[in-house]
Length: 132
Image (cartoon, one colour):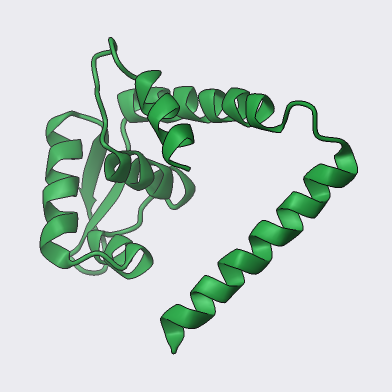
């Protein structure tokens, strides 16, 4: 994963936005959950509130996230990707697909399915250990 992330981040260099790993993850979260709140990201990521607040602030200052007041609760702010954020996320998505193809080159369909199953079991084991 380190090598994969390193290559993914390398693809962003030279552009207007150089994102850290957690910034990429936050963009992905708000791409999949437009209108979610900072609290939603805290609950999803397991990170502390202060860390997420700094992350959101940086993404807003970089004009990658837009904020709107919640209609039912004016104290809450709904976040979604800005046009620039959508562009960055689309590039990351394309790059991830290309890196995935490189990573799986030479593996048959059966081998890819077996790898996916094994990784799913590893993830389930780790999630179970986290709950214990």
